[in-house]
Length: 407
Image 1: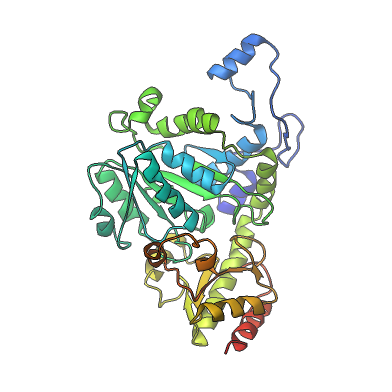
Image 2 (image 1 turned 180 degrees about the vertical axis):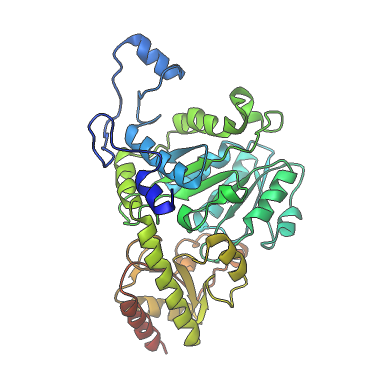
């Protein structure tokens, strides 16, 4: 079954109770069980069923199964936001005294959360570059997890996932990959050796900017040795240990569950993921080439001048995502450019049907240190562009008009 068909027919079907071909919205807090014995058995996991939406919900479960099927995982858990997915997944593994090694070009919200891990006694070390040897150089005996993004936001760096998975597994630790920017349509990190995949479903998976959410997909190869990963001693299920504890402890006890309405809306958006990304990535490539031809300081993995072009082409199958950046010389010129745009909207989001622009240094990296900004490729003159579904000619005219107004 190919990807576009799997979007509509894989891992789910018409609703068994009603025949509805669209997943029904079960907007309820709790669920009835006929007998006390039934309720006890569902709570104990001896009988399938639903008891409380914080634990599971049919609408949310449908979305989990769909995205898990697209990623080729063993199972998935949905969360209230992308950051809830990141924080729950990381804290599902790490304890005080543990260390995490990450790439430097992470999304500002993730790097802010990693900064706060110091209060939990967890150390985060950043690789100085994107090669596996850069990660190896900062790993120690306490390293328990490697963490990267498929495309850095907004640095647009692209790590070699296969090489990093080999490094991680040689040290007996898992590789976590945030696949938000590329989605499973462009990249399926589990097939490249990753162990856990994370998504902010608020972005391209939803595609309409109408609901936030997050999702964690677990693979089925990493063993999660309870002698090394002590949190799994009571959940020793081999490769499923991470997923079982994530569901039974993290989402249940911490309460960061996805709302049924958000799962419903995201499921509707998911239907058109491949169509949207085909159009969007083609337009992004066109715009990047257009900017480069005009002499603008553009960054996009789809350009041959990008140092990440070859690995991006290999991992993403010739499509390079919706995000590109421009450097405009000064913060004032960056602001003037944004303020002159007609169709591209000044919005702090990515993956929308509409083209969005943002000045990262004054927004999502506002509280980052200068060192963190440098690592993420954030400068005062940088503008992030996330391409949408508008007519490409209208977008070209809009951007060139804004550039022409700069002095």
